Amino acid sequence: MRNTVKTVFHVLLASSLLVAGSAWTASAVAATSGQVGTLKFEVHGTQGRPVILIPGLEGGPWVWKDTIARLEKNHVVYAVTLAGFDGMPAPARKTGLIDQADTSLLQLIEQRHIDRPVLVGHSLGGTLALRFAGEHPKLVSGVVAVDGLPIFPGMDRVSAEQRQAIAERTRTQMAAMTPAQFQAAALAYMQHVGVIDPKLAEQYAPMNARSDIAATAEYMSEDMAADYRPLLKQADVPILEISPYHAPDFAKPPLQLSEAQKTAYYQSLLADAPHAKVVSISPARHFVMFDQPAKFQQALDDFLKTL
Image (cartoon, rainbow, N blue to C red; front, side):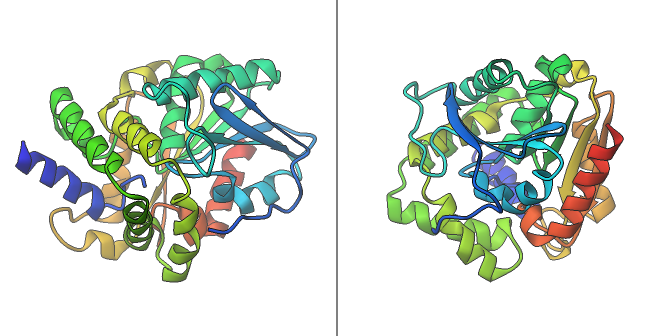
């Protein structure tokens, strides 16, 4: 088991696929904000097709600052934050956090009467968006998953029991971090996995680090243990998966992949989805919207135009 754990984590780090300051200012103040279930939300824009933006592990609306500024001109944008992230208190119930977020997303759509929104999720948020589309395909118009997949990359190569064991070990290790260790890990992550530009890593790492440590560990563990691929058979909506690629990260063992090979791997994880397409953006790491904002926005705009 020890070798399996080591191999999986090397694969994840080498492929820039591990999921995981100062305040940010959007182009306009949110017209409405509130909380539904365990989700905090803010609304930007007044007309057009609704879009729900879901950040990943430790993220908040700051992940989407440029995206919001672009989309709010022609869309009603709901930027959500999962409980425990970005300074938001952790949920009262400490387990089943992804389930709670999923239920809260449904409540948000129903209570706010959001008509078939497009779900755009980064990392864990992309995984949640794919899961939701499989559960409620008639409630959404489409999904854009930004380096978020139905199963944690690398975990498709081990058994469910091994996934659970690895996930539990990860949760225990993360939950035991001191605040100083958590901050240091956030910086190291952003420097080696999150973004290419070291200055961007220094800018955004403190924003990740203002999340709740125990909640982050639980979300991460649940994400690593899950496999939502069977749900994709019911996700009868257009799905765009954005796969970032930074060649130096794939130049050394244990994982050496060309850009085309990584794209094909992502496509294989989405094989059960009837209408899934993978688009690669390079050079970029996990936060592709920071490394390649123009390319990312073009891919998103092109997808929205097809709906």
